[in-house]
Length: 298
Image (spheres, rainbow, N blue to C red):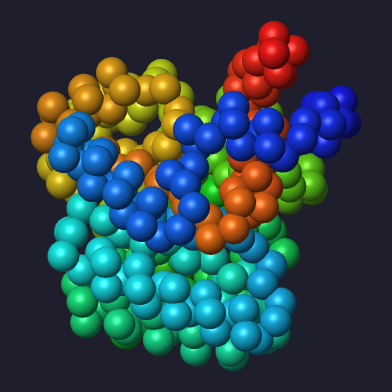
């Protein structure tokens, strides 16, 4: 792990931007909107817009971020295939829970008025409790609000059972954050098995699973399980990240008559995109190897 991080730290940001840019739509909101339109028109894919950038500290930056989310909602209002992803660390959680919850509620309320669905991202384990607390408070008012849960955390089955409000949209993924062994599984095969178990649990509790994985074997296990129960194809969906080469599988899912949603990140400043790209490279050894080979070949 240390060696991988050392290699990542040595790669200049401009080279990460060149070789890993398929992961990011580009700079500015319009780049995200255009990518979402392109994916929908050419491939029949739905999308989630993700504004890159975390740990916003200054009050004026938080306010600017809230305003940008308002613009995202206005752009998405006429495009039902677009949803929006929110991060607590962009919206004031570092200033306090009350402020962050107020900002979230304002955004979710406008999105509900415009017919746009939004999802609250799950960041590292230090924010899990407060994120779920804010979600539940706002979800009790608005049906357009979803949440992300991570199968790597031991606690996730209990968190699913605790979502005893109305049925929720729940994006279930392994999670990108490296968490301590005291609270999280460390082996990817175990995390993937737990993801399948979480999908089953979500359905048992009447939720709408958004199954976020690129693992073809796991996706087929999910499909076989859901088909065996006769679960309607509009009661769940699959999600993947922009830039991951899974076009054939994505089109197979689309042809099944299901929602295949692509997570489309964009950045207002390239430094946020580079941070995101390095984190994705760290989680994907194959992609890291490809980038390093490309650098040395040049």
